Length: 260
Image (cartoon, rainbow, N blue to C red; front, side, top):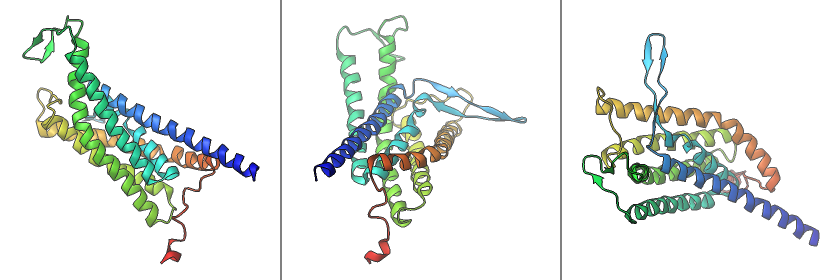
C-alpha cells in the first residue's frame, strides 16, 4: 500500500513539474512576443527565377508557434480544462505587461515629447523605452483579441478532433487545430494592429491592401511551416511524456461507441 502511494506521489510530482515547465515556456514566449512585437520588421523576401516573392515578418512572430505547441502538449496530457486555464493566465500576463509599461511611462522624470512622433528626441536617454512602450501598446492591444480567439479555437478544435477520431490520428489534431487557429490569428492580429492600433507602417510605394495581404500570408506561411515541422517532436514528446508521467492521453476517448 505504502509502495503504491510512493509511486503515485512520484508521478504526481513529475506531472506538476512538467506542467509548470510547459506553462512557463508558453507564458515566457507570450511575454517575449508582446514586448518584441512590432519592434523590427524582418525582410525574408526571396526570388524564384525572375519572380521576387515578398515575405515579411515582425520579430514578435518568431516565438509564437511555441505557444501553440505548448497548449497542444497541455491539451493532450492534462486535458482541455488546464489548457484553457493557461490561456486565461496568458491574458492576465498581457494585461500585466501593459500595466508595467504604462506606469513606467508615467514615472518621473518626464521627457519632452515631440508631437509628430509621440516620442522623445532620438538623443534623449528615454527614447528607447518610449519607443518600445509605443510599439508594445500597439502589439498587445491587437494580440490580446487575436490571442484569445486563436487559442480558444486551437483548444476547441484539438479536442473536437480528438473526440471525432477517438484519440487516434495525433497528427491530425495537432496540425488541424494549429493551422486553423493560426489562420484566424494571422488575419486578426495584422488587421487589428493596422486599423485599431495604427502600429503598422505601410512602406512607400505599397498599397494598404497589398501590404497587409503580404503580412497576413507571410505570417501564416511561417506559422504553417513551423506547425508542420513540430509534428515529429510533438509525436515523440507525447510518447515519452506519457510514459514518464504515467498518463494515458486517450483515456475517455477510446471506445466511445460503447457509451451510446
